[in-house]
Amino acid sequence: MIWRNVVAACAAGAVAVKVALDAALPESALLHPPGARHDGAFAAQCVKCGKCIEACPYQALHAAPFDAGAKAGTPVIDARAQACRLCDGFPCVAACPTGALSPVASREDVRMGTAVINRDLCLSYKAMRCEVCYRVCPFIDEAISINYGAREGDSTHAVFAPVIAEDKCVGCGLCVERCVVGEPECAIRIEPAT
Ligand code: SF4
Ligand code: SF4
Ligand code: SF4
Image (tube, rainbow, N blue to C red):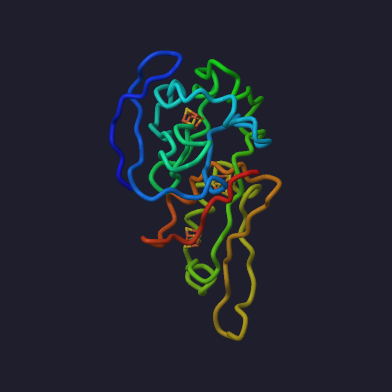
């Protein structure tokens, strides 16, 4: 993905933000930071000031591209490039001046989205040992676990397959960032919360 620093004028002044130049994902596919509301109010409350983007110590946040409709300029995460680290105190939320990012009590309460594994691409479902996504998950054995079993139609190899618990996964994207299957498509993605 190509990013360029630009200056965005807004109610809070002029701030440097990063804007994606390539083709946009549909609005529903945009992954927003912790605390973003999922009832449609987020895009209305966010004034695109870029303060959350500046506050993120991992540079995980970028401004949604110009063709993202009402969400253009709102903070988004490209988990494959840099996932959310679920920082102590959520500096992105603390920096938001409008409440578009609302306080989150704990990391477990974050609901950015849910990880979805593409079983056609995942090495583990092909009876190879990987489990990288499992190892990197901050909620190992809760949000993601390993299902041990026989491989369908294969009497020789067992499958050590990662399985997502939808009610525990917070959508941080660390599994996506680290998936060993390469471009253009890795074997796991985040379905943003709606
Ligand atoms: S929790 Fe931390 S890493 Fe995640 S978006 Fe906020 S500041 Fe960035
Ligand atoms: S997005 Fe991936 S790494 Fe993050 S909690 Fe869910 S399964 Fe774990
Ligand atoms: S890291 Fe990727 S290939 Fe490896 S088990 Fe997880 S989803 Fe499958």
